Length: 204
Image (cartoon, rainbow, N blue to C red):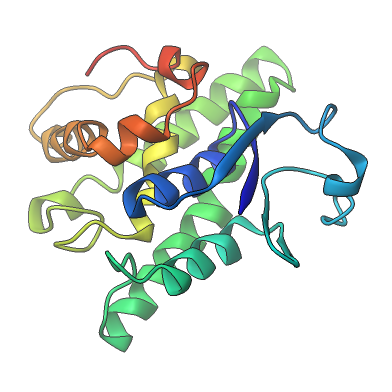
């Protein structure tokens, strides 16, 4: 099994977190969309990373990769057991992909006027802070156990300082900040970081 992973990409980071949490023996080849071998990039119609190759199987959707890894390596499980909880988890992952990840992508690309970038930062901060009440009720993202939802959210939280976004410390955000520290302190998360990513976030 080989993961062709961008060293600084939150989609690739999701997959690396799952691999680390499950202690999967996988060769991780750090590359970029420009340097990856053409025969690898051709697996994805969009010619972008990450790409996971497992024998004759080639996967290019991070969402599919995460669920494939969770099914192929079932311990520890990273999707809830019960169908309702599992559906809720998938809904949260979809929300991150539809509402939060595009804002992160815009800021990473650095495209747009100064006013547009500032507005995007404010939108992203609003989206992240809106999640804070969740962590008053649950240890992890809408769950008492670490799940794929956390694998989606953690790489974004880690990148906030490098995007010029600092979460304020107040009574409303404290549960979110506590969750953030809990996630960042997990051995699986620490093992998932590339050398570039280790420098993205100031110490929490």
